[in-house]
Every structure is written in structure tokens, then in C-alpha cells.
Image 1 (cartoon, rainbow, N blue to C red):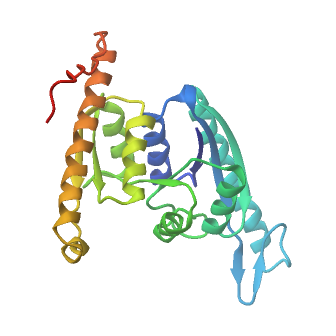
Image 2: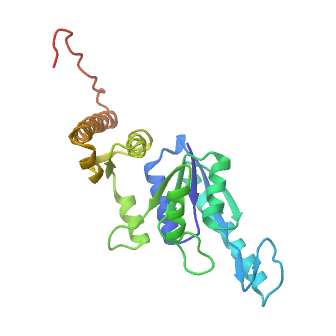
Image 3: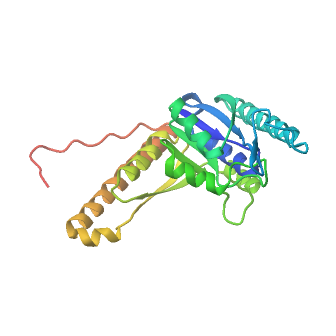
Length: 256
């Protein structure tokens, strides 16, 4: 799987990196750690790519930001390599969201991992607005890492690393997107899940579509939960060294 990790050196981007390392299999994942050096806007001009003009030392500031972006990407790459991932560092220039989306499209990435927030000021690109743009416009799946309630990103990383198993919640509503989310959890997440909670949203729109739609959502929810539970049992049996269970064939003479 081809994964893009957006990083700016902030605690939230480190948390995104930790989530990636926790849930994905290094042997099946290639990670590109991407840091964006955003242009500096001054009045009616923009300083980028070496600068259009030296304005009060801002060209030097832009160069320093670019150096920092290179360092953030390289450090993330080294940490991921230390955990067994095939990883490389890339530094891009331009608007953060647009540049990331273009990079994802060019490289056919399957997943983008990003923190919910980033650094403040000029050095930041992992702001909430960037994450929202990625969710709405990115052609690939987007995973946004957010700190646990009441915890800093650093505290959240420690809590995450201390967990042997995680709980997962998947919301389904019958849409193609929710089906993709369910398949992604079942097929892509490599670590053991303590529980997989499937929440079926009976949309307000279903009241206009009648009872048939509501029944189909209920049926889909029940089927999805059964499949999820079966997948969890198989994973636990495999990790415990027990033989994998197989479905008991139904007698052709019995019908429900």
C-alpha cells in the first residue's frame, strides 16, 4: 500500500506518524513523508522558490522554512525506517492542501495520514482547514489523527503506544464510502482490535424513502456486524496460535 504522511514537525503530525505505525503493516506499506514549504505572502508579492525580491530579510526566512521542512521530512522518514517501513522523504513547495492533493494524484497514493492541527505561524501547514480540504477533495482515503480527549499530542502518543489492542468504531449508512471504510478496517489494519463497534446511521432521508430502506439498513448493519465479529475471531485465533475457524456448511435440505 502506498501511503503519504503529511508532516510539519508538530506534535499533531508526530501523532499522525504514531497512528500510521500502530495500525499498518510495515511489510506491506511504502510511506512517503511529505513536508510542504509554503510561500510567504508580503503585500502584493509572494516569496517562493528563491524569492522574487529580498524584502526585509524575508527571503532568508523563506529559505530557513524550507530547510526546516526538509528536516521534518527526513526525521519522520528515519523514525519510520527504524520501525521497519520502506520510507522516503519529499519536500514540496506551494499551497499545502493543493500541493498535497496534486502529489497524491500523481503518485496514486492509497492513503493520506495527517494531524488534525499543526504548528502556529509561517511554519505550519497542518491546520484544520488543510485537513478539511483533504477530506473533501482528496481522491484517496484520508486518516486524520486527533489527540485523545484531555491529552496533548505527546501524551496521546504515549497512551497509543502503550495499548496492545485498540477499539474501532465504524459508522455505516449504506453509502459506497461507508462500505469502503468497513473493508479498509477489516483488510488494512494490521494490529489486533479489542472490539469493532459498527454503528448504523438510520438517516433522516430514510423516512422519506419508506420502511423498505430502513429494513435494508437494519439488515446491512446486522450482516456487517456478523462479518466484523467473524474477522475479529479469526485474528484472535491466528495470534493465539489456534486453528482458524471455518464456516459449518449448511445441509442442502435445510432452508430458512
